[in-house]
Image (tube, rainbow, N blue to C red):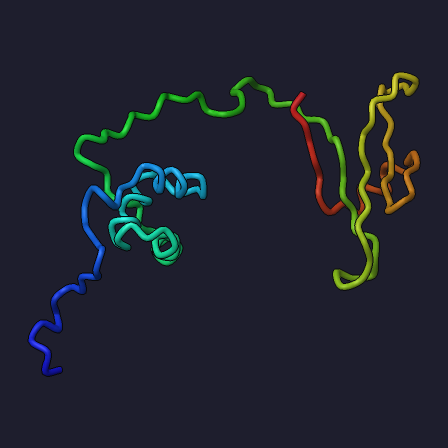
Amino acid sequence: MEDADIDAPLVLEGQSGGASTADPEKIEMLGAMGFAAPQAKKALRETGGDMERAVEWLFSHPDDQGEYDEDQVAEPAAAKEPPGTTTLPANFQLQSIVCHKGTSIHAGHYVAFLRKPNPESPSGSTWVLFNDEKVVEAHEVEEMRKFAYVYFFSRC
């Protein structure tokens, strides 16, 4: 408490600010870990260029997006077409069903019914039951729908 410069920032030996901490190789290494260049630059600047401390800083400041340089201009996002289609009517076909077999949510197991192409079938497809190691053709389609837990559809 008697120290007159207690509020002055700590300067470690060998620590230099600015350009030397923005080593392109270190920024590239942090980029390979999934961090954006502005984040990496700020972390290296904050830690004096120490890679281990920079990684620790990045994980302890996940919301900090870094700072863009004045000469670094963000490229405008290309106009993307929204996913999907607006064609109506939207027709879907049931492709598979996951069912829970058991007395409660705490006991039992899951089975899956999948629609498989079958040219010999009048409908052009057959339902197949996947139950652990047992894989058989399912004949009780309405029964499986009673116990359905998750439905998977594909757009026709």
